[in-house]
Amino acid sequence: MSRLPLVAALLAGIALAQDPDININARYTVESVEVAAPARKVARLPQPLRDQMQSLIGSKVDHTLLEDISRRLKRELKASSVVPKIVKGDQPDHVKVVFQPAWRVSLKASSEDANLVYHSKQGWSGQFAVSTEVGKNVLGAGIVSDNDKLLERYAGIRAFYRRQELGSDRLRLGMEFETFHQQWNRATEEALRGQETVPGIYRTRYNLQPVLTVVIAEPLTLSAGVSFQRFQTQYPAAVKESSNAAITSLRYRRRWEGPGVDRHDLNAGYSLHAATNLFDTDYVFTRNAVDVSYRFRRDDNTLLVRFEAGNISGRAPLFARFVAGNAATLRGWNKFDIAPLGGDRLAAGSLEYRYRVFQIFYDAGAVWDHGRPAEQRNSIGLGLGRWGLRLAVAFPIKYGRVEPAFIFGMDL
Amino acid sequence: MAAAAALGASRAFTAAGALSLKWDGDQLRISAVPFRFLQGKVLEQLRDGAPVTVDMQTSLLVNNRAAVFRRALGRFVFSYDLWEEKFAVVRLLPERRSASRLTKEAAETWALENLPVSTSGLAPGRDFWVRIELIIEDRKDPPPLVTSGGGISLAALIELFSRTSRPQPPRPTAEAGPFRLQDLKR
Image (cartoon, rainbow over all chains, first blue to last red):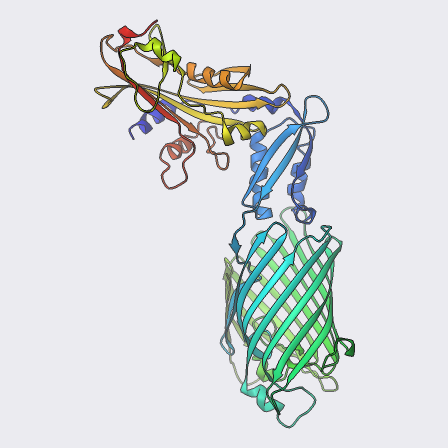
């Protein structure tokens, strides 16, 4: 259309000062500010953003500022839109500001539920799940093929349901169902021969896991539930066995901002699996595990420290045993070289520094069985990471040989 | 439209509907259009306390609508006073004017009447057509007219008038004619 040059000509050279009185409501004073979202989501908003919202109280309505805050809220709350609404206040010539977020009902995949990992010594692993949020309910389903986290490659499907509020926003319900088919590494099968301490392999496994989570005090949560695992053993005969356990976990997750641009993230948890005869289980054991990760960010620099440890008492099936030497712990090592049957003790840590896309890391740890000596192993590596993609080469530190492992990861 | 009678009974209106015109000296003003634009989501936005920006363009077309004789462009910002429950409107362009304590209909009319287009040089017996176009800004992502530095954001206006791939904001349009100045009541 030919109107464009005319518009440009009309407006060129005209300067107009920004006028706060364009909106007639700019003469009113803000009495209160509210985000119409579940309290748990509001509690997770960054402190500077909350401070900015609080600073609106007592000032005149500035719609440009409200739109700016809405855009930040939209990003933080992962909402499809956030609309600032102004309503009459309780006092004359005062108004209340309500930020109204909306979430679209759509299928989405979070990085927690969708990722891909390649380890040059263990092959590909990945999972992809999509979920939809209907009100306070999240329904999801996905596929998994993983040879990284456990001693087995487990491949199959999973479905989950999460109720984000159950009567109170401090109470949540989750239900997970998984059914997998297993494949085993030759090293694991050979290590099982001639020993009776560790239970044997199985061909199929399914798990039904209802969990209730209580928000004790943000950001501390306590989860309690039951895991009903049933699997079909392969040797000496194909029989169905159960491993049912009460599961409890305590998690503390906090993000805070220091002076300037410093950001800190702390994520710490303790979990207990107690498989007792109370649950009609074929395996009686107790599994304790702790994990702590701390991330510090300043400008382009990130420091990441992680530690995990655990112990098992009793006779636990293979899927419950600890593993080290994968894409997350003792990177560069092959978990089947370290302990083809895993271990009932674990201690592993990692120190990582990132500058922009570059990363260097040092991993150390050991996985062993009770009553046997723990052999500490170390590895170092470097890599690149950006936009959810990670590429790393890791070197196990050992005498005589240099056998790097290549790791590629992607959060979908 | 009853007001259309003022334009001369022999003139036919286009299918877009009737426009009501006033000829005042050298200036032609539109005083009514066959649509309401402060309604639906726009009205909801106003009642939420948010301002709504409306760009208006009035064109005089000649040569059987093949050529534009003259144009006038204005930017108006409407808002709804939450305490007085009345509408206010500010004309930012061509030059600043404002009115407040208006009903919804009066606010619409005020904006239309405050965008005159000059008829200077148009022969009284020459056929012309009138077209009015409105662009009502999308609430979600309005391009700012005024930058933080106080100047006009020309880039935003270029973007506004050349949008093709994005969902278009409401764009009511009306066109009527042919008219002759000699037939219009002054």
